[in-house]
Image 1: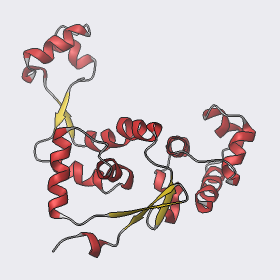
Image 2 (image 1 turned 120 degrees about the vertical axis):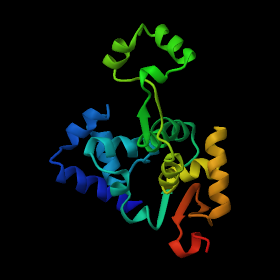
Image 3 (image 1 turned 90 degrees about the vertical axis):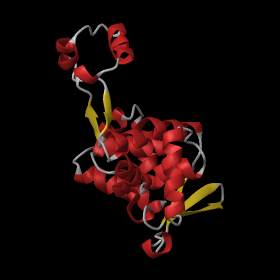
Amino acid sequence: METIYQNIREIRIKRSLTQEEVARRLFMVVSGYSKIERGETELTIKRLFELADIFNVPYTDLLGEHESEATELKMLSQEFIAFLRLKILPAYMMKYEEPIPYRELTEKQKDFLLSLGIHNQKDYERQGHLLTRAKQGLTQKAFEEAIDDMFVYSLFQFCIIHNPVLLKMWQVFRRKHEPKFSYKTSRGFTIITRLPPQQYWKK
């Protein structure tokens, strides 16, 4: 875990941000944030992603070598689950979505738009096409990209995801591939280790 705290400090400095500025954006006192960089306070999953947003870097940059070797982060708290469900997984799936043209909307979808005060095609287009759909043939591609993320993978591994469509894709994935990550509990932490490619691709 020490590497993670060092990475946070180094990336903050590279971004020309002071501890005061980062603490303010995290709604923390400076002394509290300083303890994060010194490794004197627990780094939660939520805080990890907040820092990645502030520094405008992938969260794996903060993890450094831990993402590819072993990451010791507390898992399966309600905060962790909610954060992944609301932010990480949708981010992957949205990459392969496209807006639904107004003329192709169902009556049920139009009724939903009416409840939002959108009455016609002009209103719909002005609001930026609120309704989207997966691009044809790319849903599985999006899922396979998502599952390469160790946190998203863990959502399925620990049966946190209950969406039947996603579970079906997970089952297909499990039949075709060996596990990508291994899990071991040590001193109250779950250690996640990415397995070498030759160990998880079936021939």
